[in-house]
Length: 221
Image 1: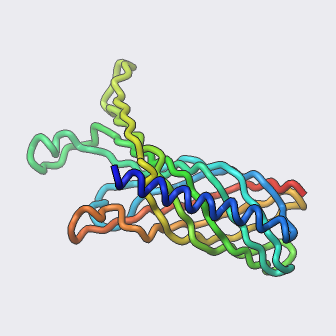
Image 2 (image 1 turned 90 degrees about the horizontal axis):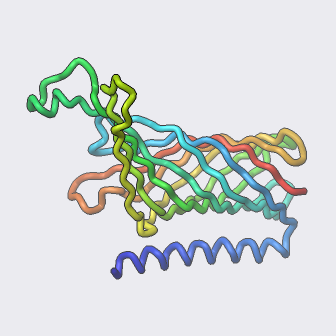
């Protein structure tokens, strides 16, 4: 119970920091905006053999707090679906490691986060800017879907399960480029790598979240 409460406290602290930045931004030139786009995510490190990337999405809001013509602070509040997928060869399992001709099941693990990137935005010119900074994530839930790839008759025997994430903390570094299309619209490809070990309960094992993101942003100027 303490662990769950502690995770929720962390989420409240980071959200409070985001709220403070919103409030403090009133003293600066501040722009509000909405954003959304694609995620291409997985995990890297130990115990990841056969793990593949999966497509998903993200969406939310952001602020641009201008401190000068060359530097802006950009806090964001996003719902972000991440995770990974892998395929299982049933013959390999049944025969103790022998290789079957093809995989029988595909497992899709969907990790749904509330993420708060706190990025510095460094203008290169009137059109391009570099983005870099920390990102905090709080796991809302984990949805696991298992699909039988051998179905031939069209029946749906897919399995789906969902468990609470208890606001488990993830954190890492995000970096990317913002490309301004016009005064309101910009595009922002970005790379995120987690630095918090997802396997901290296992000795001598480490793996981390990674994600490629492509966002379309709309600023209300």
